[in-house]
Image (tube, rainbow, N blue to C red; front, side):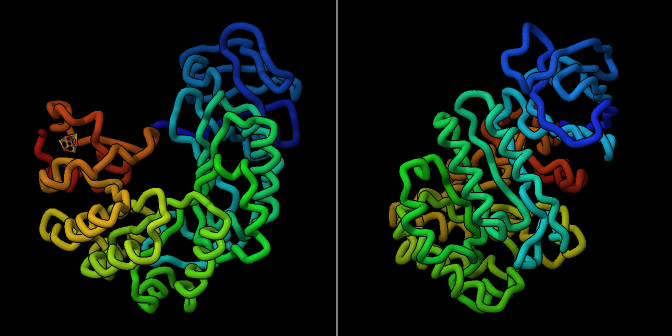
Length: 360
Ligand code: SF4
């Protein structure tokens, strides 16, 4: 696992964003240059003064855009250099309470939009930046303002924003039609075609109806949408019906991602009730994939190790897990398809991972 939070000491009192430069000269006034380093850490100097980071080498950190939080004694690696998996958490508040939530919501909100905007402006060229929560659109005006300012200054960047789509309204349509939103895609969860089942999974009465309205506004805006469905016991056998719904009502989506469960957050304590062993019964998943494909909906499987998927459906299983939280079983070293495989989340039970793989 690649650590995203590191210990640090800084001269400054207030949090600040900077880009770390271990080699060469600084290119931007917000860059910090390497002062000294050893195998345990590195010290940098920038316009906010000196700061020392423990737990990573200067080479590891070179090019990273970080948030230094002196009072907390921490550094957050917001945008890791060279990584295709960079996601910014804009809030931990949420208005849903999904049964399997991987990041259970908090009641408090730490407003970091200004700092996150500074980080985006320092991103490497052509970076895809993920935005997640909590529910980012609880702060819709701040979110859209940040996205618009960043993309105006840096049209090479793209955003992928996870949202429950409960907070779009008719007034947003003209705003989201702006050409810069072609650089933005929205990852939106839908768990069942049956409103009561979707509402039960997300823990919010009326969520499905609100989501349908959200989709209508996004369609009117020409928004780019990736649909996301986490596989849990309650929706396992409802997937074919969901595929029919997607084919009939949501053909505008760019992709439909069916995602295996993460053993973290709420799902960890409810694992035996929620986890579907897709090796034991792949039929509803296979039927959903087939129906989607027949209707020209691009379906894909996230977090499904390729060898655990029947050969006919393996092409749908992509390397979806971010590098910093991905692991493989020992036997995977002998597998020819490791580079195409999701592997497992770092927090997936080892005994299960070690016993369910069959190298291809
Ligand atoms: S053996 Fe490992 S790398 Fe190969 S498909 Fe299975 S999980 Fe993936």
